[in-house]
Length: 531
Image 1 (cartoon, rainbow, N blue to C red):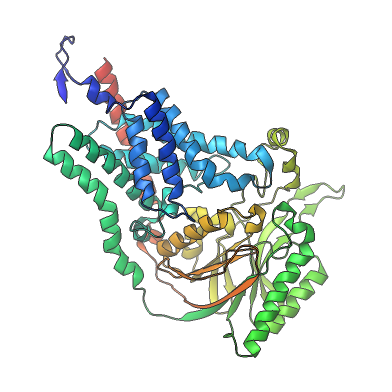
Image 2 (image 1 turned 45 degrees about the vertical axis):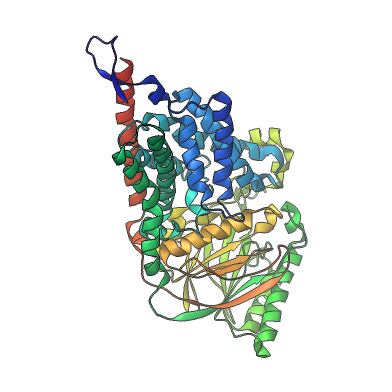
């Protein structure tokens, strides 16, 4: 409510104190609310997959920080970030010890930053819109920093099974995150409008904010679900399994390679017996050959033999050895590479992973990390690659997005813009044991399928491998983790591009600009109120 401050010489309008601070929750109520908000954001993600919990979490985030000063809101944001990121990302420390707390601390701070700024826009007209834009700005930051980005916890990645997901085809993951945050902030605005004197315009505006995202998503869904007819291809994803979970899985590197050879040979037997249709392409997972098959003839001969037996190209996830100087020092680290292996001729095209995993494929701040946990010395720093990840593989122009890269908008978009008509996510989840990481990654792959109208084949060393249709639905998946298996499915090859593919990062930058503009206006207003 606007009142006139009797102590002001100008009689300037100012916000009533109770309204400025919002509903009185009390300190402990706000602290508890921040924790619950973070947990709600977490449970939206697979394997729990309660997509509807994310808008509730955002509503609670805005509620607990509304009316707080910057320092208090930042502290509450830290609690939200901790409750959100800890259960979601604990898999990063599964086998490297307490060093993962460095990552957790950095990400928690980055999550808290936009939350701390929300109170500056909650009294502006259209507050839910500006709060949602600030959330997208925070995710844009996490896409790029710290450690060259770690955007695993984008709101969009918890939405593959919900009504917000079709919006990915229009504006990518940033638009989905925006719609979820808008709906949540709209819930906060609706409760606020209903608690005070009834203002029909305020109630109507809040309802629009709540419903706009899911209604728009449902309206877009028919175009997502009805793809154009076109050619198809039969693809096999081979899951060979590993001797044991964790970083030690590659202590028996030959066994991992042998497992994938054995499963592919079994597939060839089934094809000859007529039990399985002949695939046009076979995809092995990341790290399926941690023995460099280019420098080690025995590994290369084994891969060549089974490729000749199956008679179609095999995409092999291999670790290519680093390069050493004459004195033995490493001048170029090992490379995480996908190799197209052809029957009769051997290795052809390659793609080396561009976005490598911090605390998994390289250790940031290694001296500090070593002081936290000596286990970091078990991780050798990999060398990032370049390129769009498009590999000609038989009848397919395959877009390779290796494991962790699926979280980066540019990695997937570059592959599709480069001409990929099918996407694959070769992944080695054995490194992270029996954690939820594989299911979270599967949810991300489903969203990417919708975003770019491409089928996605996930080939995992130890599970869960899956085939995803262009509409984001699961066509097939393997069963329990750490069991071998093979998926053979026919999938469409698409060459059309969605609006999201064509406009690229533009929606994200527009939303960020709107959020920053609202932040400036909100800051000026607050200073005027205090003057």
